[in-house]
Length: 263
Image 1 (spheres, rainbow, N blue to C red):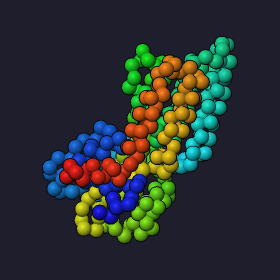
Image 2: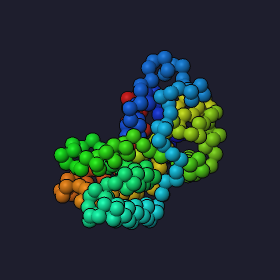
Image 3: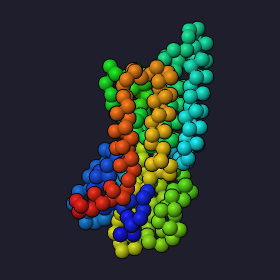
Image 4: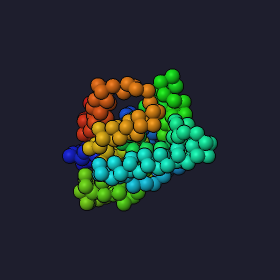
């Protein structure tokens, strides 16, 4: 229908919200009574339809250059922070300085800002055994796993207008501009179609799909420079598989088609 015809970055989802795959995690199922009654505006008050209290409204860097600049800025500030930490403790800026609380906050803030493959990789690292990665680094990524920022309304509207046309609001009786969920690839909004159907609109962040490989390379390079990851943890074929899977996750047309098969 309207939301899934030709829309690469917007998907309409009905039914159980936990079936949204990588865009959402740990959301409760909508049981039978919810499916028959619909969500409606009263659903905004439901406690489980809300963002993490750590989520913030921040613009997504949409171009490869802007994303590279963000990672570059992180590398510089982490280096400066490590040197300052070393100066305080009078020893060389080894891993301890790089993983100081201040630098941990910088890493979390940057990954939540860029989102995409970098945030997804960080979330994956958070569940690795502490025998593989430094426990301090694991704690950093644990914080990332429970956080994701969301797009400002202006940027979100620009994505919808680009994908669905400038008159996209005309197809909706109601649209909640603040998302109820946000993750590494996109964010999800409640809406109601003109025919009365309540839907969840899953909106992909701009620039995410075209920056998968560069995001992974940038994050791994940053972690490698700090010796925070053991050598060989991510061999080349693993990176290729990860990139391919993330590319499929960004293909909302494919996901919508798969969802329709189960209806």
